[in-house]
Length: 68
Image (tube, rainbow, N blue to C red):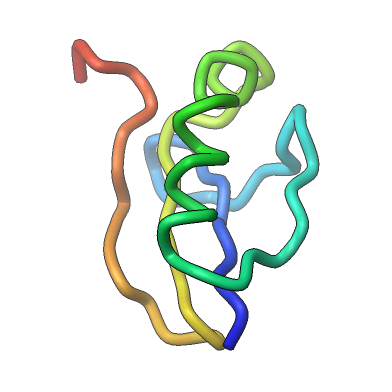
């Protein structure tokens, strides 16, 4: 199983992340990574993220801006 993030603008358009992640072996690993890098991703142009497992959407879009 591979857990991955999709990085989007607020309108759902995919953008390249400022920090490039790997595929994660667990959901917890993926969530820990986003917790560490969300500010860099937000500053780099991503407004929200979507978490997927092996191509299946698990949740999102989740805004990176806590005020959203």
